[in-house]
View (cartoon, rainbow, N blue to C red):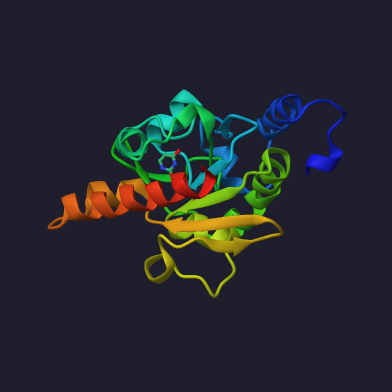
Amino acid sequence: AAAQLHGGTPEKKLREMARQAEHCTRCDLYRNATQTVFGEGSPDASIFFIGEQPGDKEDLAGAPFVGPAGNIFNKCLEEAGIDRSECYVTNAVKHFKFRLRGKRRMHQRPNAGEVQACRWWLNGELELVRPRLVVALGATAANSIAPRKFKVMRDRGTILPFMENQALLLTVHPSYLLRVRDDMALQRELFVRDLRTAAEFVH
Ligand code: URA
């Protein structure tokens, strides 16, 4: 994807790619979503976070992780000593997938075909940012980029090999922390611990 862009800095190329993605019809999700939510953050980021897909708030705002999941994500990043503005934050799928329940737009998981179609953009972002560490937040992100042999709940929190010279860390999705019942504080602590592992790795 990145190879098809004209010259310029990675920053310019990312902006160009985001503009191209506004008109994406690689899968059908563009039909009902408000807009493409492209990744954002530093083109020099050493940590590259991948979520699942924009939620209701992100779909309206046009930016990733600005809703409830984004709020808890931001707090946990801060606790782990990670400056979000120095990272790159994106999603495996760039359009919000939902079904209507009355007037509410209920999140639906993107399917494998939708994730695959959106790899085009994710690959481009990865090529341009060239992060030292990719952090997959949850199973959708993990399934999009991690080799099949890795499993989120088994392999979370350990630095895994990824591509050449890059590394991968799997962890849970921040919205999981909003859903778990009994051990929310513990799960949140484990998530922050994974983020600290990421911070120490790129330090
Ligand atoms: N959940 C995600 O996976 N990504 C977002 O951007 C927001 C919520």
